[in-house]
Amino acid sequence: MKIDHIFPIPIATDKIDPVLINDTLLKVNNFIAETDFCKPASPSELLTTFYKDKDFLGKTGCHDLLNLINLRTREFFKIIGINPQSFIEITSWLQYNQPGSYFVRHDHYAALVSGCVYLQTPDDGGAIQFHSPLETRRCTSAFFERVKQEENEYNFSYVKYSPASGDLIMFEPWLQHTVQQNKSNESRISIGFNIWADIDVKN
Image (tube, rainbow, N blue to C red):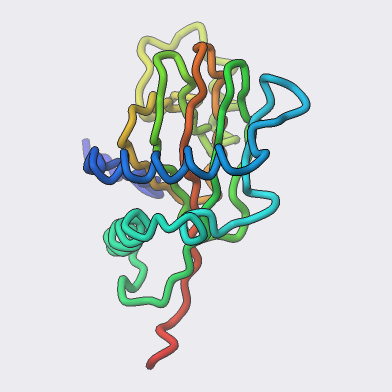
């Protein structure tokens, strides 16, 4: 029997050099120390620069990480059929998940690629969970849960990635995801980013 796997959804992962991660984390910690960023209304509030500034890596001088994201984005473009020579714009923001914090199911509307770089990841600090976009299948499967024999790529409701320091993950922004609760006693620190693209303005 021939099986065609149609409409695949790519999620890319990579490991970043610890030297680059440590250098970026140092700059992030300097930013935190020099601002009132870590003064939330609630000790378990998710803190982010997303709503105020989306050029976090540029303004904190993390150009090496920006360059790496640029390179990995162009590799991802090849996979999804986008011209890797396109002009791209990278927006970035700091995500500071304090103990007890989480983030609800959401997507990144209108971007072309999204991703995250994890700088500090305590044990049980919270996974990123991608939800199946196949709503029709999920509704049908609910009727037949009793006869399911195994969980596989044809019937799962979500897939989960438990990040470690130095992990990079990239995905298509329309894919809804949840950041699970940080159940540790330490904060999880990561950099989120979105990518936009257009034809090369030099052409």
